[in-house]
Image (cartoon, rainbow, N blue to C red; front, side):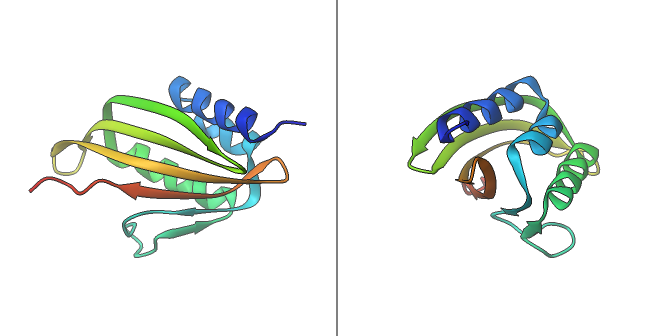
Length: 125
């Protein structure tokens, strides 16, 4: 039975290999929640259920070009772990390019990720 460290390392592995979709199907609980630091285009900050989280990933991939992405971690604490993401990205609609950093805090319950929360560094300007 995998523990929090195993799940954390697997998630980081998927992020580094750009196989996040596979990670969603194998590591997340069906009713997992994802809470963003900022509102999404639909006005929500919360995606409930693995399908909604997958849709959020699809939206990101359709609207942003990622030039580089660094993944630091995982950092384990009991049944939670944190990952630091640093991304160089261009918004396709505007051509605006910037670097962003965020921390993902993940909660593991019964061997599945049940919650992810994202914390962002303030944007410059």
